[in-house]
Length: 419
Length: 165
Ligand code: SF4
Image (cartoon, rainbow over all chains, first blue to last red; front, side, top):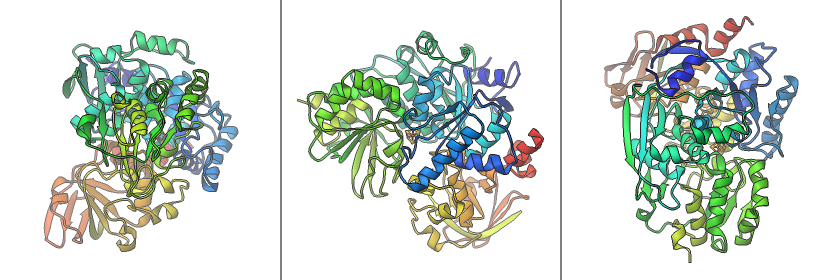
């Protein structure tokens, strides 16, 4: 009796069955790194005396964090990825103009598919669990080893099951579900474990919401987040998948170390307050919190549906005079679609900035750094001290709808409050 | 292996942005990274005050957040001999074994060590001694595969062997 996570791992190490706690060597379908983490991997790769990567079609190097290059040092780092990609003829290197935020880009382009085992030198690699893949963040050294051998060692994790029931209210979605969950179990509530999300709410949730939920599994310390693939998954991947994919499902009698049920009927939009993603409150309990900046974007909420949600809220309104609103589509395809649907006009007319894809302010990189004492509402996934700039700045995390409404109100608030 | 130094205490959920803020990640040069080690933590002057060999002692979930190996690299290059915590975040834990920063889990040691105490960690015996208070604590055992990795000289040495390079 195995969970979906155990089944995928078993299939990738040539075993019929694996048990939680077991150490395995798994074959990798994809190895990922970015402009911050790949330079260390490349140095390690060279220092090891390796001459060849295991498969030039299965290594994705994506300069998205400080790209388009924000300074000379970043330019040097991005150049390392570029040169390495040329030298090894990597097919999955994405240059500025074609790149997007890695965890939005790879599912969108069908580069990760259901049933995959993926490692990435980026903690939010867990996003692809939304497709029914096993994917997890590792360090640069793991990626260096993975690039050489096409394998990685794993301890098969125990699984926790999260069951969501009820009906989601207006302006409530994947982001609120995962924030609520992290608020419940804490930032180490799922340490070393797989988080399996299920229940009637998840079964109805569109793919973008599922990706948002799995994206933040790491914020609860989880090894991976995962959702059983179904018709919604099939519809999403059928037209994009670049490889064969396989749907795995948990056995009915699979073993879970913890099962939690949530009734989401009547749940308000959720906000994570500084300085941990577990400091979660329903929006109405926040009081009046003024903001200086509102950011919509990132691998958590930079997909087209997120941009649409923010645009719908802000349409016909103006960004508050004291607020800077920055909207960053996660990929070029999202950017283009935003133009096509007139969403860029909506934001510009409202007085917001609309940018080329980049991680940018999400990690305090560039494109929207906060000064001391400033406060932002953001659709990103972390609100640690100094995450978006000065160590004395603050970040509140929310859905795109709340970020957009707050931009207009000048304080954290709901779309219903806009006149 | 034995490590000896003075203890620097940190709280729960110290994240990788506190260990090495993202604004310094436009380089992977260990010297540069070490300069900013713990800059956004509760002890921003850590680098000015610590001495090589000192031991970091933290509450639960140390190293949560990003996968950046820059975090253990900065700590190691700073001269910290080892980190003792009640628990470590998963990716940080894995990174430490891969790149060779010694870490130890012990709830009782963390509770029994105050800032500034002189601490000795005996990795082979699996004990931590607080030389200031004269108390001894047990370390959680290291999983056998991790021991194998350490014995091989880290993940890359292990990989070289496996790949026959
Ligand atoms: S958008 Fe933010 S969380 Fe996502 S990969 Fe980029 S920096 Fe990391």
